[in-house]
Image 1 (cartoon, rainbow, N blue to C red):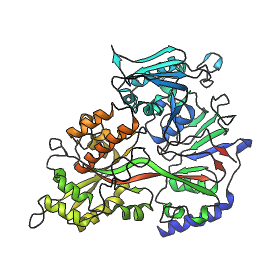
Image 2 (cartoon, rainbow, N blue to C red):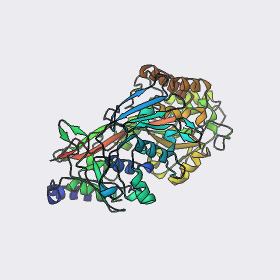
Image 3 (spheres, helix red, strand yellow):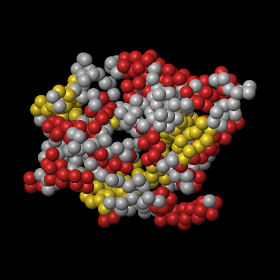
Image 4 (cartoon, one colour):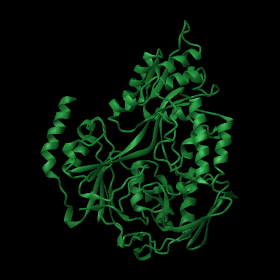
Length: 542
């Protein structure tokens, strides 16, 4: 490992002078690598970050998020919500056009109208589409098999819900809710995945799967910034190098303009122990960092009637609390993650959301408290504490071993079982795991997205309640929150719900993740937000 690290460092020094700030043929091209590859360019299937990032450049929705996670106009220039919170009326711009494509007469893209949203949303809920995003419209009113999507005229679109749901506007910012033209779906059918036609700031140019994707400027894009039409870039080029170390070297050479996240193979090359960019790189790149709406946690099946909950020693709340206090999250973040992230000493809701409560510390490292809860659970003094098993993927083995070691010092015997990601996902969905490592990345910017994991009507596999947590008071507060349109009052309910969850301890919070963006010094306007959404329409390359 030391030899590999030394080789990287030598190459960094050698390649530093090769920084290429120029673009091919005088065009301003922004380049990034996507190690995870891309399987489709159809926003109906934008379930992974790699697809979300690509489709976000080519498609638009009714509304969009700014860097502070506020819902802003996009194709809808304004909207109203009825007093009962059920009817959303959107007023559309009249200057938005689909990209030019052979699917249209004479190849010229036509204007986006309200009927296109009726079509696009019905396509998402159509079972024949099999979109993983169909759930986003679960709360839309349905009569005689038809969802309540309506175009009153070309510029007025209406959605009606079954019951109030305050986060609905945030849901509509998801890429699933992008508008697509029926002409392109009819022409390309399933092959729309590689012939995307949207209305976004960049248009599809070419995609050699597993090699390269190119998007070019939409010169007729409707958004302006300070009098200048967006986007500023001429093109975006995405490569698909699976070797993150090789991609890192390309970034250092200046062949890539941007890098998101950090891999253990070069973590110590770029960052110091405090998570700061090392001095030797500051003249060539800069670091953007902020909270990421991703909570990493250990889940505990607390339902004795489920396969994973049966005979689970952690059905004891006192034993769960002993585990909560048994390991030092601050040291874990410092030594294993170079202080990337925030120790999970609060609740399930991560920093970055407005309802996050930084004053409510749920659990910290406290060996004495851990021992006390072990005794309250009826163990010690001659009664042996039974061992239990934590199931995880190999990516988190170092963290699992750290927890295992620290819990061992408290007399808690924890075994580790490593399984493939697909297996863990399937067993978790079937409630067959007693104790498992998991993470929850926000789909939309509202704490309800996290708290829905504990609503008793959301038991997996139909919903995200993987721990099978059930609490009548929690459910009552959850339902009250969904009827509360005033943010301040709703957030107060969220905090009460979170306190119930943390007191019952069906989850052990490990840490709240952090957005890390490494950017070339010649790049401006890239921005960042806690959803880690990549938006390139405002980017300039000098």
